[in-house]
Image (cartoon, rainbow, N blue to C red; front, side, top):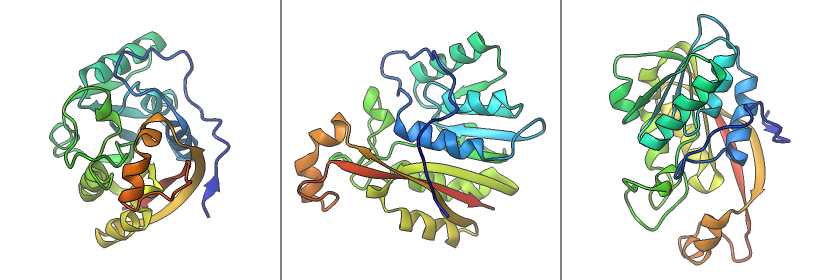
Length: 227
């Protein structure tokens, strides 16, 4: 059964956030709650794809797991490294595309809050703050890449935790993970108000059939898949 989150989160406070780096928001807290329910500790390996400030990676590292975090944004990489250094937590933060940086490696847990906001541009931006949220016309550019790679990133009995908007069709995410040989379910949901990005795209979202006329909130879901 899916949890309806109160969004307390177990995230570290006082995080450094460099310009253009995604600040922890509702989706981060929802994923933090899901992460808190996972079995972690010494001997467990964790990968975070798109670490941003490193908040979730640090949550896992604080519990004793060996954590690798990766991000395509240099400001995000520097931010996560600085936040780990201040807290004296071991965290390996890599710059680059997650597929390249994780080749031939497997993990007990992969977690990700990928870009998932539908955008008029068909391709992902290559620079700037929008890299943290714009994900093509259906919002699935990164979701589908991660979903396709998940069976090769997970150890036997390993798990994937991914948060994204209901605009991106969670049923498709579940179906494609299942087709790839994983058992998948939605384990948490939360309804949150639209932020400035979605509000600025209201007319376009309506034309795409992604939002109703008076809609001003979205449902977030956490998908958990197990190999």
